[in-house]
Image (cartoon, rainbow, N blue to C red; front, side, top):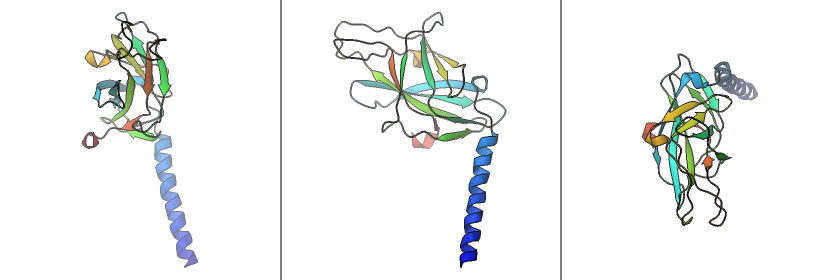
Length: 178
């Protein structure tokens, strides 16, 4: 009995080790091998706007991605706008996971922010583009179009702070679960 249990434990350890080696042997997903996409997402809470953004692996090889992407608002000229990113693992955003992206697969994450409700006549500018940077990368993928036009509000009604976005960790995209 003891020999069978030891053999089963060794087989399980080998299987786990093989899975870890596969993930570890794949390079980290780099901006040059990704294409960004975005679409509306059901709101996380009241007076909140949410978007689902993601990275499509258009590279030739499998890569891994883990953690929180960076989000930078850009103006019409492509210059960075003030953006304050708050990483969140709150319910609805999900836990941090190691994601293996094969060619043609996508990873997604949620970006949410307060809408203009409650700020009376104060105004926050909207982005014209977004730079979405995968975790661990220094460059980003620029997203253009309506899905890149966001106007995040934040702070309090008395002390408005524009550009505050809540960002969740990346997850493997599964169209059937959305």
